[in-house]
Image (cartoon, rainbow, N blue to C red; front, side, top):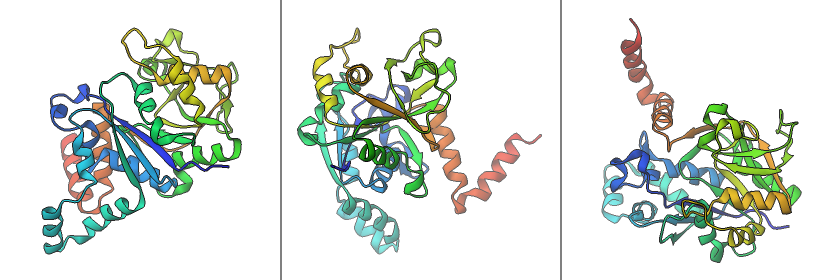
Length: 295
């Protein structure tokens, strides 16, 4: 049984929600305090046992590749300034995983981005981790990607992470159909279908897809088969819908601390929470917040 050792991080989006900040800076590189959002995703993948990460990038996203490359002048200065501990953390990540970059020549949807990685993935199982969705883990036991990888090893079936969402927010996510008995998915449940960003009145459930998936290579067959939607994009949710109908796709709820950093409010909340956990910032930030909001 093959273990899940490869992951795809689609990072070719234009980041229009953060424009003009993202005109020259990829949204995945926007900092959560002093650490780019995508680094949290890669740390999650490494902790889950992933060895090869395929970055799907578009034009103007070379800053992500550069971040994981060597910068001799900067690194030499960090060492001379006695800040080698900062460098050691990054070097540990470099040595723990292979970063493979593939150019998506046009922004043709999440499904197309995943399909671009097929030459690297081949017939192996793989994870898909959205680069603007971050989870904070203390150990492998609360790592959602690790959990999905473990479920795949047990079942040999593709699986997705789902979270309950307010019906008014269903238009932001892919929503799964798991039939009438859908109150508890902690033990997993077969997905009957997937609807991409439906209106609340058309959502088949309140279970949303927050950007963590593990697939076997069968998903590529459906990505090759489906037609582009009205916006010209190939949606991963359409391929998942076909996979759910023809084979088996399981959904699992899993308690993980998660931030949607592709959303402005989610991005700000993540920064505040992460700053409050930093010993050197907590006291002064709390003083500021108390002064700001205490009458």
